[in-house]
Image 1 (cartoon, helix red, strand yellow):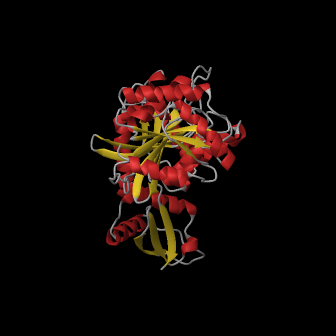
Image 2 (cartoon, one colour; image 1 turned 120 degrees about the vertical axis):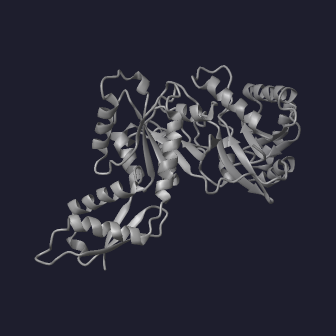
Image 3 (cartoon, rainbow, N blue to C red; image 1 turned 30 degrees about the vertical axis):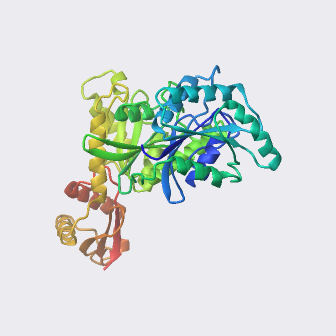
Length: 440
């Protein structure tokens, strides 16, 4: 990446609050509980005509009993390698801690080894008063150069800090991702979403542990390999509301829902060893209501004992639970063993293109008249129901209108019949469509 800064430091110094201020979003979770941010989180920022990327990292810790400690350290170290400027954040209200000194030591070693060209900027956060600004002087002892006193909560001193940051960056525009399809990897906790992301990217971009609910933030990653280009969104596992054990879970769940709203195609991941449960169906209907493309991924298929037609039977059960909209692709994969993961990209691309498809009105009218000719709608109180034409309505998603003399006379069963025939003819597999009946 060019023009990238990484925000690093021990837990609970205010990194995510500063990230949200820079990017103008609430993408990073903010909570008083230390260690909330566990993954690298990317955002875009702009200052004085300069665009740059921002990486929010998990709090760097040493010697704790947290199962995530080693993984968090790996994430921070990867962020250090990716960034051009490293913003080392400390907390003026706590003073210099042992953890701060260890992070400073790590940064000095990075500069001496693989990161010689990188600029480190020290920020003393929570400097809300003049008295605290005087106290921030003690951080010169860390040997990291000038101390920038800021308050990421109120914004105090952030303008001067941003001047320093952009001054250390290359004055080149960063690549934008406008127009690139967005795929959201969604599903229940521990279904293997982060394993799929890592398998596709060939690196440890998301933390993977056996503990359910490891990913708390929605991670946006640019994927460009093998003639495919997407923005991949890895989300926190969506839990049922009654299972929330902490406030953080609520924000994680909300972020996963927003990822579905933001994406073009939702990759809904199931755990093959558990089958499709009610929460998976809820996730599917959430994507359907938002008119997103859908691909169902049955992960951990390598753990299922195979019998004759096992996959076909599994697929039939899945589609039965998705009814009435069951025209969706179902793929059987193993993210851990990288089995059929490229098929995921191919199918997602197909669904994305179908979602954008436009059909000439003449072709639509020819189709609807042919179907009506073979099976006409039932009459209404002795009045003949006549369908005359069909058009596609300009929209970001497939929306169609059928012109009829008595719209309210069209029964639900006949609407489903027409939609099924329509899907057979034009192949909208994986794409929710809308068909409106309008008075001609």
